[in-house]
Amino acid sequence: MIEVAITDARGRLASIVDEARVEPVYLTRRNRPVAAVIDSGQLEHLLEDAEELADIRAVDAAWEETQNLGEAPIPWEDVKRDLGLTL
Image (tube, rainbow, N blue to C red; front, side, top):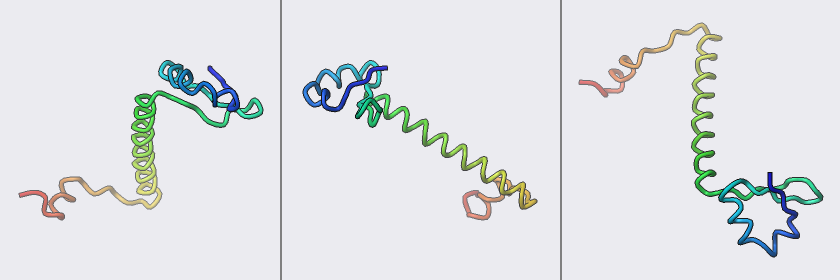
């Protein structure tokens, strides 16, 4: 893990960006991490994974709510038919 004090980072931004392409660089204040510089591709990947995880959690919550209420799920074919999405 690479850590750089913010005061030191001001003068070496270009090298920090180069280092961040390989692994995250944590910016510290008073020896505590306060921010990170990471490769933009890695950030995109993390955001996609976070969105997918949020979707999975939403599905899990919906299933749990259905079970707690004692309701049966509506089959997808019925939903499509009710919405006029099938012929």
